[in-house]
Amino acid sequence: MGLAAAAVVLAVSCNGTPPKARVLPGPDAPGPTDPQDAQCRAAARDPGRVTLHRLNRAEYNNTVRDLLGDTGSPASDFPPDDHGFGFDNNADVLSMSPLLMEKYSHAAQALVEAAWARGAFGACVLDPVKPEPCARQLLKTFARRAWRRPVTAEEVERLVAFVTLARQQGDAPEVGVKLALRAVLVSPHFLFRVELDPSPASTAPHPVSDLELASRLSYFLWSSMPDEALLQVAEGGHLHEPEVLEAQVRRMLADPKARALVDNFAGQWLYTRALDSAQPVSRYGFDEPLRDAMRQEMQLVFQEFVTGDHRLKDLLDAPFTYVNDRLATHYGLPRPGTQTLTRVELTGHPERSGLFGKGSLLTVTANPDRTSPVKRGVWVLEQLLCKAPPPPPPDAGGLAPAVDPTLNIKARMAEHRANPGCSGCHALMDPLGFGMENFDPVGRWRTKEEGGAAVDASGELPGGKTFQGVVELRAVVKEDPDLSACMTRHLLTYALGRGAEEEDRCTVRDISQQAEGRGGRLTDYILAIVRSDAFLRRRGEAEAPKP
Image (cartoon, rainbow, N blue to C red):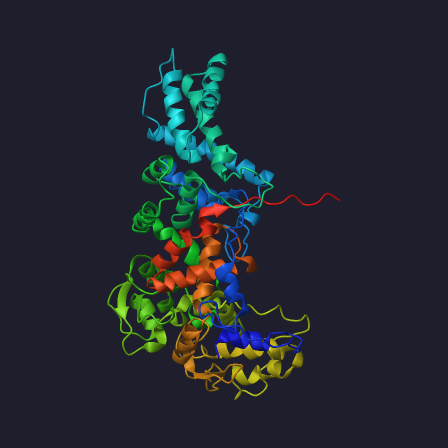
């Protein structure tokens, strides 16, 4: 029985009273007992809709980098972005506040002044007597790139009007051009990814335009604006052609800008970003060089999955990693003899293979002063199997004090599993976390806990499946039928900038099956997503009934 099926049988009800048990096969293992399988084969796919999508801080920084050559990360001064469904590019929570609008205005002024000083707008020379022709050419070119679409003659003339206004005020032509450039950067056409519905109240699906598709694609793979090659293909009306779309995806994934998938998708899915705020207590010797090495290790491993030939599921047990001398010593591996992270094979050290052996993940899923089987178990359920348990009851309480120093953390947590109000959740969460108990709060290997008690890394899941230690644990997780669909769900959520809901279940199933059928690489998942109706189409939203 897979973990997901066990979760359904158990129903992880924190009041200890599971509803009627029903076993559903995992989404990528359909069978005759699944009544929804036939529905998925027959049903039309609802592509859903995405709210008007404001650029988040990472997207803003990357966009001004590619538009103006500015690498100063101006959005670092903006208010933090909210998160939805695990990601900070969720359109539904990317609101616009007066403070943020003020920050945009200040950033636009600074960006234009700096780019002007660098000569970034030197395509033509403004004639002091008749500056309009040069201004028109400059502003049309800039607005097309910034707004990620062709601009109308009327839009260009409204921008050129700033030059006329400057002349009337006795200012030089460049003053008016700079004002127009700033107007481009505070326009909703720049700050938002605009997608239009011909009939906003209609729920009938329709294709997104080629230009809208270009922005979907570039912000998915690059967290940035389309480049000239992608924009020209979209303007020519060819991007929906399957061969053209696939060629663009492969070209974009080979570009260094695809590093955005490592920083922004994997950084949130695999919790690498959370390492920035981890503060283990001083006795573990955790410091900034170790933090940096752990962060880079996870980034470099995932980067191989972007550009390499690995199956995405092999993240669970990839037999290689990247270490420098500091991290190798921390892990108990041979030192490579450099402070630069170096790729090493993990022959003889199977405990370090895959995600569960990575110090960054082990650190952020621990408490500052001890391990947390609950946090580690919940991470597996949420990020790999999409089976998040419900919140604990208000009176759940914490870990009991270690009255008997010979008791390990597994024995101390038995109280939770014995409590009827907690047993439902902990019977599934805890064993997954126990399988990683050989790793201390900063990811070092151990056989004894700090108090001297022997580590017990065995676990038994609902349904009777048992494992011993992290190597057998990851085999259980990798074999779970819901793994592929869950990875799809997270990637689709990030790609669309909206949550993958229950209504997307058949779409998720389609994508995961197609990707696995083509080899199961990250590229296969990405191509299956961008070919899906959810990525190529959208719909409006019916008006709510008036009270």
